[in-house]
Length: 105
Image (cartoon, rainbow, N blue to C red; front, side, top):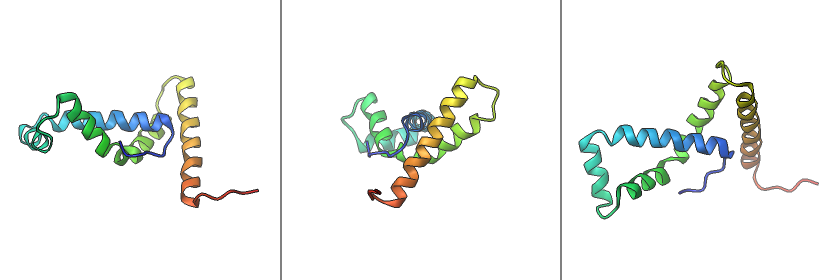
């Protein structure tokens, strides 16, 4: 899998979204046949793993949005706190990546 720079909760949400996309796409026989053509010797599990490795990084923005949207839902307050913390920590990571690798102090 490509290296993904995001909070682990966001990465896990991105994996879930990517798995759901994979399952949806593979219901179409034509898409499934084309995917299998790319990796003819791969097992079912390997096909899914290859899809995740290729596309999970692209799902990071959707994962962030999904988690942020969950904050307005009537869910457990502990889960809301965990999501809020993950989003805040992820934003700190994101700002640090945009600023480059500098040491201050």
